[in-house]
Every structure is written in structure tokens, then in C-alpha cells.
Image 1 (cartoon, one colour):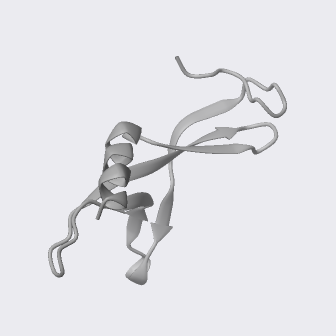
Image 2 (cartoon, rainbow, N blue to C red):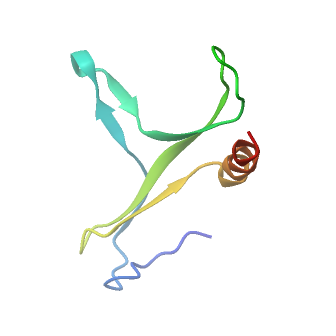
Length: 83
């Protein structure tokens, strides 16, 4: 269950699952994400990607970041450490 109050100020004005985007070259919109390398190939590496999302307090502005697939990223991280 999502938390309904801000842990900084106690407000209940919480915006859930807000996308974080960058406007790249040509003003092209791209969602920000984290990438963890899963293979050690010279040309065709594979990555686990986790889209970033934010939780924002509408009172104090505190922002908390999270990803949609933490378990997949963790497994990729463990694999990456062994490369």
C-alpha cells in the first residue's frame, strides 16, 4: 500500500508515480531510467533497465525516487559483479 503522508512534513498532498523525463536533442522526450549491464560482450551487451518514478509532496516538495523492477535490477547487479 502506498504511503499517504509525507515523511518530511506529514502532509497528505502526495503525488504518486510521477514520470521523470529529459528533453533530449530536438526536444525529444525520454523517460529517465537506470541501466545495469548483464553481459560482458564487446558489441552486443545486454542491460536490465528500470524506469524511474517519483513520489512528490505537494506541500514541502520532498521527492522520493523508486524503480518499477527492483528485483530484476538486483539480479542484474549480482550478475554484473561476477563479470
